[in-house]
Image (cartoon, rainbow, N blue to C red; front, side, top):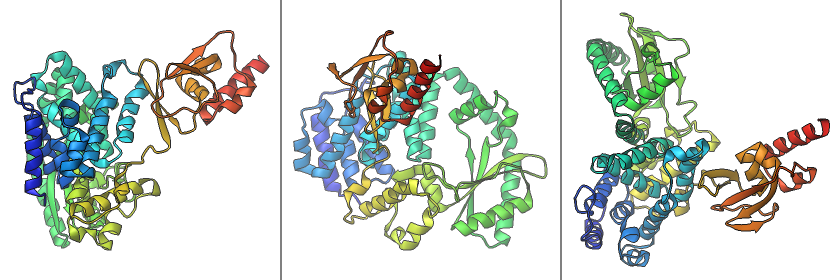
Length: 476
């Protein structure tokens, strides 16, 4: 439970600091940090995160300093506010999302994750973006579109990466309604029409499944899930706009107590209806990359309707809806050995960071002392992000050299490298690149690939391209 007096003290500091500042809507600026604070509070975040959320814009936009925050609220709150400020600074001056190279759009997401050294920094940033989207109507159309596109291509995928499904859906749908309003309205109407026509059939199926599960003494709840507008838009693009190929416009979720019941429920559903071949996905045995777990099956009912079922435990459902933020909400009882091993017991080694973050976050929520390093995100610890002079972001492994960068841009650029400037100064091809470097490759048509360049290359990609060019040169 958050210390009310400490939170109220933070609200007063933020209110005083933002005095006289207003949003484009005309509302007092403090309405924004208060809304962001309410969002992270609703997500069940810990006290330090709630306080950092209401103070998240103070260092950037007011006279309040990090030292002021550290003095009043401690090192952790100051660290979180500093993290959010650094994220904002890293993104300041970014161009319109459409002007970036395709891989840079992905790397903007990676950069946010890499810079958000603590999971809570990213969660505050996502709450900040969500409120900005909810109040987007106050901005001029050009700004609306820019923020909406960036939200679709960077922030909604970030929410997905943290498996915050409910947030991803809301962000993507609001953003899409500004990016392509006509398409949004058309698909929204289509979903509404489908739901009206399917309502009676779904009610009947729910009743049949509930009775069958009851006979097997399986404790369960069933609810419905309607596909979001933006998800439908993306899926239709994959299937040449053919609605007949979309089987999961409405899905029924069966939520049970444990993993064994998930598979028992699957058997019950398959005994009632015909499962569609190739449409059973076991994300419990093999979770998605973000830790999402559930069994999906698509069946054909007796009256020839196609319906998708999602079967999961309560914990899996909570995680699917709120992702890593949900981990801060779990209570003391959920920290048992049984919980830790039972919740996502099948996660491969590459996903163990999810388990660690969940357990650490749950301890933090209950006020236990934790090793704060457990909340560090090391998803891209082996990566560096460097910039072209135009501001595009290229990710490379640590240890990469200028020729690696050149060959990542284009094999022809790599072939004709005559020199390199790093951060505006001439450098040499043996210089290891560092995170944040601005790298300008100088080229000359007179210069061609050399065998000696193998000593100046770190990545297998560049090595392969150089080998191909040398082979062509020798055999041509």
